[in-house]
Length: 198
Image 1: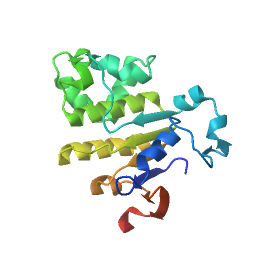
Image 2: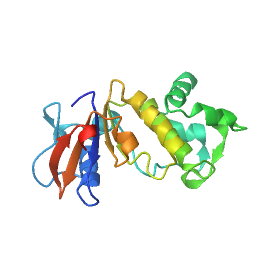
Image 3: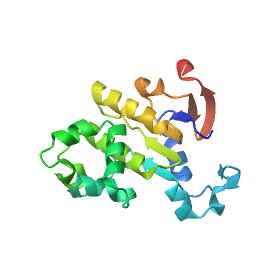
Image 4: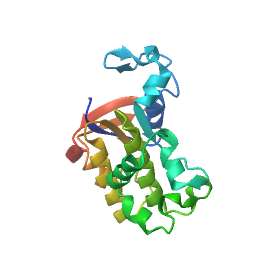
């Protein structure tokens, strides 16, 4: 539902990643259809649809360049105030401010120079900057320590305000923050439950 925070869960191979690829328009369904506010997704302008969504994969893409350039990847027109709000929302401001060159710090390929938790928060800041109506996140806290998972979880709750959020996760700490859990099995929805009943 619009404006909701929903988790997708299920065993490996249950169809979670395939569903995400379908939703973001990377592949088309071989049968059936996906509707957005009652309109078939294939009838929407792909560029217009992509402007309305943000996708945060399990291993977010970062290129060799400054943190600022990496943040602006999905929203090149963002100004300094928008960047600061996005960093604040993603709990990224404290570690950015500790870096000698701040936003002008150079990252290596795939974001080398920052920890996994810091890179996840930068990826969330990028999603904040896009101001997308739909945000899809794939295992946003996988491999993180407890403190990084807490910070990412808090950032996700802030990002969810006024947006539709869909996240793939098995992590108990994250699932406590969602409104519903959609459990997939063998490519189908097995059940929809509250986090407490998952």
